[in-house]
Amino acid sequence: AQSVTQPDIHITVSEGASLELRCNYSYGATPYLFWYVQSPGQGLQLLLKYFSGDTLVQGIKGFEAEFKRSQSSFNLRKPSVHWSDAAEYFCAVGAKGNKLVFGAGTILRVKS
Amino acid sequence: DGGITQSPKYLFRKEGQNVTLSCEQNLNHDAMYWYRQDPGQGLRLIYYSQIVNDFQKGDIAEGYSVSREKKESFPLTVTSAQKNPTAFYLCASSMGGTSGVDTQYFGPGTRLTVL
Image (cartoon, rainbow over all chains, first blue to last red; front, side, top):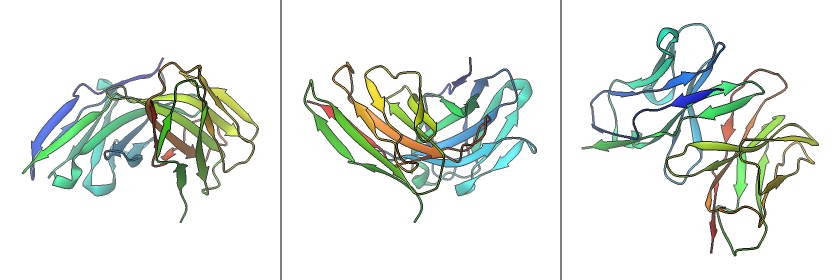
């Protein structure tokens, strides 16, 4: 069965510092991978997705993610974090039948 | 503006009552989904529908029911059989029409609290 692991429940970074959020997946075939962001009390917004092709994917708000098949990872990165990036981030893998399996999320705190 | 709307934003229910959460989309998407979100558990799939008049159970369907009579609407009923319904409920939609995977877009959510 498909599964997604986000090892970090909370991460705190200083404003202007770089960010990397980890995501590991388990899936037997070529995965379809997503990163979403959620502000408190809001819905999820798509940051980026990987379906095929270039393993380095660019998204909105200056985020990027790299698919590494050998490590079963799809880590999210941003070179310089802004206070407005504080939110919860979810990694998801697309499963057969057009379903998504989500990780438990990582809460990002940004300190000034 | 195209998008997904959910209403109400906040909902309070007494124990033993059924309540219905609304989800409407004007994206002309074929597929719609309901998720439940609890702190520290990510999102869990309740029900999904790939086409009008058809829907399937997700991972945690017990105590919930849905209907899909119109393409743009996918209401979720939380019944009295749901033992712990207090949660944040999210509706999503995608283009669908394939057996593969496509991108899901989410509504703003409904927070249900049982009193």
